[in-house]
Image: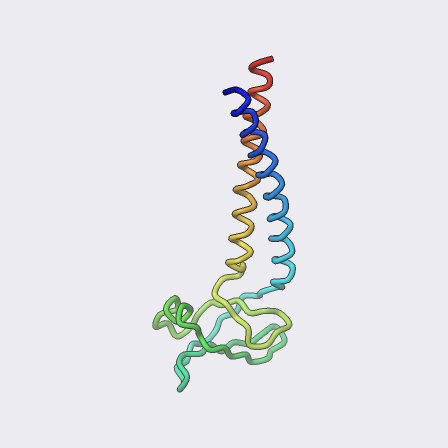
Length: 131
């Protein structure tokens, strides 16, 4: 029985720390590829294709993006919205500064690293408790 608990603690510590570190590196790479998103105040207008937002970027250029169904629902019937636009790209916007994919991978990495750390602590406690 003791061998099984020791083996499970060892497996969870290695898998948790290894996979957590790999996912943390992946989240960092995804964050770098995501680029820089700057805040802006956008005007919401209704056009023939649906609703669009228009905003000025940091260089003074006018940008426009058609709202996806989820974005339109999140904005509701407001005439102005706080958005984030991609620096260096025209007509790219989203409603959150951080990418949901990067956030999900980062949270999974933190969870696996926590699992690995807890398993390592349990493994060390078991070693010293029997020694």
